[in-house]
Image (cartoon, rainbow, N blue to C red; front, side, top):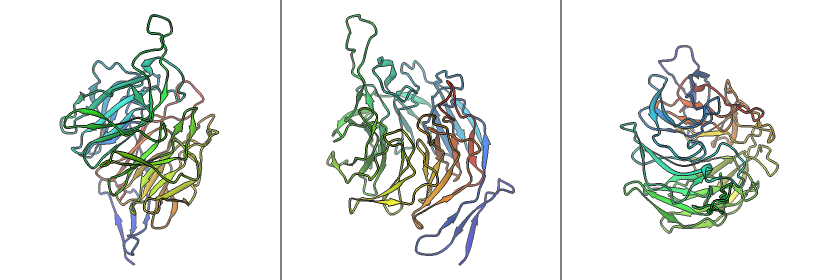
Length: 408
């Protein structure tokens, strides 16, 4: 059987990505590359980075290594391998600089950033400043950031997906009411945090939010992915009391309705999720009820409405980043294992549906969790920021890393 090799003429001496060129399974890839360290985006605490076309990724907000909120917009340009400043969010009034909001690439290539929350993972009663209703749109062509219609209520830790209609679906999260419980002058001003079952749809052309059907189960930090037919599936996340969920729901955009599906075998939150080439959904890792990372993975068959176990991970991980590569393989990058210390690991593995196995690939030079990862137009995978551990006040992962060659 012939073997072909992808090479990057711009990188001398680096390993290539070898592909098995035949077979009904579409070929099995042997991943051989190195991670190349790059400059930091300067906002090491954020996790909102999205591929924005033109071999670029857009990065919004976060906080720097001193823990100071950063409202800058930055672009990673794959052609020059450099981070480029694109200004500062004007008159920003929220908290957390979109680090725990949502980012969705629109049909025209623009990116919608919605809502935000504090870096703190514990959702206690607090002031309204912990959450924001701000929504910003980044123009892929002019690289300008524009404030657009706000969310009806402050929100963070939601999931989002682009629907076939071009609308953005925003699901669940954490929200607060518009007025405090003691608006007549008592201190402190208290807003009661609510785990949301509400959902919204955003029409980018009309710049308008409208209510969508509510979830059957309120949740925050769920994972989300779109099926081949256009429906959307969400899995897990946290219920009230920070309890991980096994429940799964499916959204029909045409009927504007949610259906409860067969639950996962393992309740999980802070996991990753991806749609495989077959149309099945892979969920990976996450945390259990004790806050410790999980090594299990499961695959959902939307036709049979059935979950089956997948090969377990080599190491348990939570708050990893995942990238569905152009060939349909799923790269799972970094994460943490211990729920109390959240010490990051550098593990990188790839799942190939053709074999049903996890393949170890080169590890990151810096372990990190709650970070960002995207595949650029040229096929390279970019990883940025996140956290190293939860032991000190400021524990950001500096520098970004990028694969030495394109991945298929």
